Length: 619
Image (cartoon, rainbow, N blue to C red; front, side, top):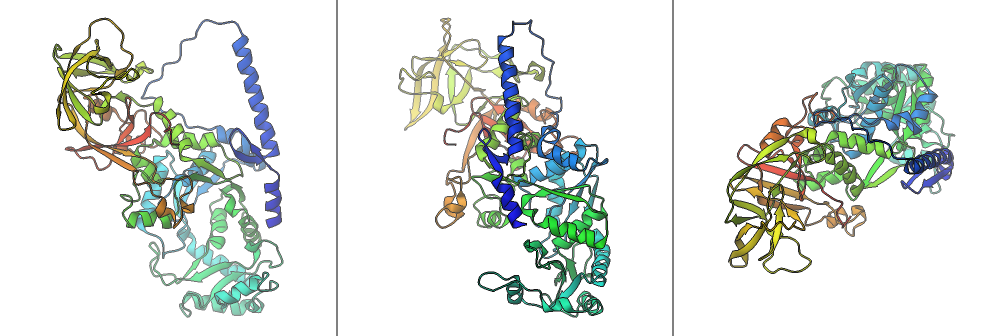
């Protein structure tokens, strides 16, 4: 099997446009599609101009359609054609021993989306066979994340639902002479596996026990005669096979732990290799889709179902999604949390799904990201900047715009009068509407939008220089300023009514605007490969991963944006009632895309930066 995997890898070729390793056939298809697209673009450019067609109106209330390209073509389409059954039945089977991360979003989108695209159903099945590592908070968080991404499980099931049935199948396997109780220790098992240092591979002597003896021993395990690691049930497979997944894998082990659902009933618990394929069979799964780390497990998966004569699902494997520049390991994130490098598992700098959600990333943008990457058998290693780019494009067309000043300094416009301005929520999407903002004699601008000493290449406010204020009829010209030490405390200005168009415009907020806190989150790590840092990933932490602006100000249109959020209904935020404060999103003009943080209260509003307006130069 290992040789077969190596052979598959050798046949892969590099798609230079996406950086993925794909099969020759897939690459040929992609190149043909791109050539066709280029020819169409050329023909369109050379064609005579036609009268413009009015675009269909789109509003912020319209739902973003779920991306489906990855199901209509490529690897997933080929998988369906292998078994074109109706209805399609899939499952998403997480272990409830930690929080989901961005890689799981691909697995959720693939399994739920594949079933949905083909008019079928998908189970959310918790693989709860290890009570030593499972906690209720993980069950709750996983279910919420699936629904937040916009998917409703056909049913929520548990591997533990089948403990009685799995036990019966284990006894059946013993009676068939295909399982035995082993009492070997770790050293003996390693020796049986063979290798250069250990000699040839050989089967455990316990495999020669009679089915009657094995059945008696297995029941003794069940009844508590043995302690953990003193005995375990092994499947009698084929140790001559080149695939380690056929070397008499464990089927049941003893654990001294009560189960969260079955209590003290069981002292023995089935392993993943015994449980997963049988639960797939019990639930009638048609396509068992998993990542390529399980490609060798396909042989044992098929062996067990076939040996027991049960319904056989089809397992197929796709490349997992990896994000560079961060860590996704539960152990490493736990270290970051416990040692207070981050606020918690939902810290916006982490790529746990609850962290991404808290940062304000819309679930629809995540689905769009997965769809853009597509699904192949090659692992996908993506830079953080690529993810941010997709999120940015999604927000550009879906959220309103407001004015936020991070570091405010007052500008007193001496000849101004108070007026009311009508400001659009989006200049590109008129259907989003507009809101009224009061313009006051004193306004606040960003401190870095003013310079005490002017220079030719500087186009913002300086003594004797004019600058436009967004949506205000006239530019303003600075005439003087006052300081307290090194800090400018006030700028005096007048309207510049000369009629000369300003070279640039800056944002502002009126006097009396709401004070808020803004948290600008940068990359948590300094490099693309934190694990490669000398001394470990902790030594790669970016000391400037969070910048806090405690005295920022936001314009009055925020109240309407909050009342109408989310803009638009994104995936599971509205219809499943999972949208929280983070669904209040907007573009802070000239600053960043922002969302409310869960720490916000009625008295103190806090915003997180979702992504910058443009890709950071450092990335």
